[in-house]
Amino acid sequence: MASLHLSNVTKHYDDKQPVIHGVDLEIGDGEFVVFVGPSGCGKSTLLRMIAGLEQISGGQLHIGGKLANDTPPAQRGLAMVFQSYALYPHMTVFDNMAFALKLAGQKGAQLNEAVQRAAAILQIGHLLDRKPKELSGGQRQRVAIGRAIVRKPGVFLFDEPLSNLDASLRVQMRVELSRLHQDLKSTMIYVTHDQVEAMTLGQRIVVMNGGRIEQAGTPHQLYNHPANLFVAGFLGAPKMNFIKATVAQVVGSRIVVRLPDGSLFAPEVEAGDARVEDQVTLGVRPEHMGPGDTITLTVAHAEYLGDQTVVYGSMSGDASLIAVKLAPDRAPPSAGSTLGVQLLPHRSHLFNAQGAAFLHPVTNKH
Ligand SMILES: Nc1ncnc2c1ncn2[C@@H]1O[C@H](COP(=O)(O)OP(=O)(O)O)[C@@H](O)[C@H]1O
Ligand SMILES: [Mg+2]
Image 1: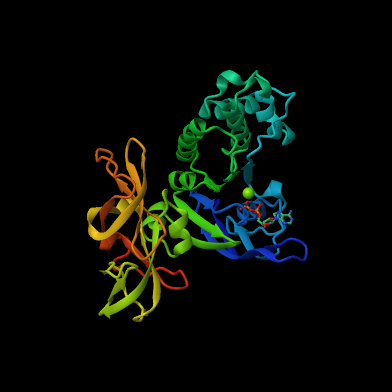
Image 2: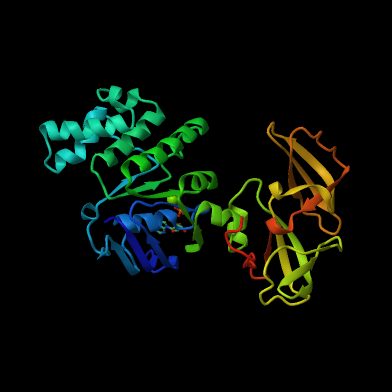
């Protein structure tokens, strides 16, 4: 069993302010979980505490049901892959991959077979005699992953392993990591600051900010039902539009808000404890807006991207720019022209003054 359970886990370096504030998280056996968040939010620290490379200041870490706070790294059944490959330059690919097994006393046919199997999974069998300097960046990263695979860990820990690769190779390695997970069925925890990597790799995403978990859920849940402004703004590009609004009416369980231009709009959310005159934020993603007549934008500029056109404009009463994704076959509107835009009530989000989302009427509806 390679499940993990973190209970009120905290971290402070020296006597300074805590950098991880009471994290609670359950990771199932075989699950692929991504920790994502801005630089400095504590992703690596949390991963390194799981790995045993950093002392846990408070709380409990269970691995496979056993308390592991003080278990030495080598006895946790984990293997970690870092951003820097740190291969031994004087050793061949084979020897780099065999190194940990040799240390553990393996040799002969058994050792050879373990390395060959890992190399086959990663399609680097033809590179086993080369030295690291004779490899491309992508091949080196595969060797680094191979070193982890040969040890057959119950849990793989990845800390931004693709950051040093160019964009097209990152896309390719993303696909390979997903395939690797399907093949090995191991538990994987993957740290990244890149929301696209998080969305594409994670069966579950843990969004972190300032040493806290903002929300954990499937990519679908986080994208369609973000719990707060931070998660709503972090996932998606161009990011969700935020429009300042005021609660104009509360009718039964529904809210009608007044937009900056004075118009009224009723997003499909539960009113909760909203009161008339509350300051709120309406959130609508650029792809959930289209030509229509809910609001009128004065166009600032348009970006033609081939598969879509993104138009930026502002509504009267609020100078901030709103992004709208349009089909590419429409001629982009010119700067200074007006664009009528429809807001979809059932694809709209509403956040209270503290940034917490009002619930959608039927969760998982979308
Ligand atoms: N060894 C250390 N000593 C003191 N502070 C550290 C140390 N490592 C990280 N930190 C601090 O902890 C916070 C989280 O860092 P880190 O986990 O590396 O963030 P991330 O991986 O999300 O970018 C940051 O404020 C960072 O400066
Ligand atoms: Mg980091």
